Image: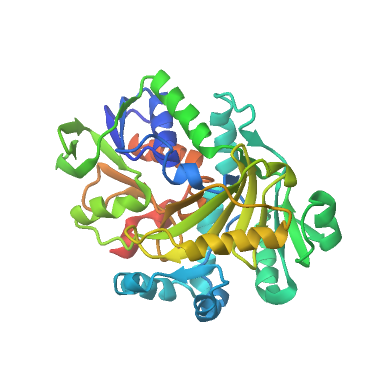
Length: 415
């Protein structure tokens, strides 16, 4: 029986992680204040692909991807791009990434992504049942398609998921087209995850969860956080540009922007950002019944309330570089390869995915400040992992026992 109860928590970040953590803490009757200079859900939570993807255990730290990187970078029609002016800053991250791209490291990442992804849908089902999700969630599965070009990689992914007991239904070209008749047959095969589902408006879902947080007694300060520190063994402080706030514990959940604060805490965490893009094709969401991802191109399309959202590509280039027209054109070109009937896209967006070189998130206490707890670095899976991260972190804050092995997510692995 856990007799300890935390008396107050400040959360830095009002994306899906911060909001879900706040909700779970409020359920434990712990006073919580969330801080963010932006509106809740207006950053990555707004612009992502909206997939709830519990099967996505195989990440980008893998030997076969390393082998393909030079080819991808040299091609203007490829899923990976680099802002050359950012390379000097990226070198330490790149070296750590190369080091963690062995078969052994890949399987370590896969195993511990699976541990939390396997719990992710149940955690969402629980909190989504508390809000009205009419026209916000569709449960029709998610399809991936590919050509025969990188079959070795596809077979490896399928085998890893089979070995972990992940349900997947392989499809030939005809079976894909039966499910999605509007697709152009430029692929050779695919797979469907029947139980996966998607958001028709990720920002609206985050907003509704945030409203539930407020209604349940949570507080929100729309302020920029300048620093966080542990001032005594049982007291921490959040400093904004205008005031100081005291809490027993702080949770740092500000995605790619967390590094500025962890650097101040004296932890050298190699967090960087993958720049991800999207465009919308207005009134075209009827062309697909469910999300479709084209693995060869590193992009996908999701039917949403704003239209058909095409998302994807990985661009390494930090926060300050402008939006890349080449990346937008690439997504547009890919979308029209699969759906030639698409017209002009409506808007363009750039967001920042917080990524660590071993593609595992950081979830757990700061090494030097035990009352400051980290919850960031969820890369492409921030949306999928929001609800389960909320449950795990609320347990860490309240010092509850868990049967999960949380050591692989500790920041100790980089220090």
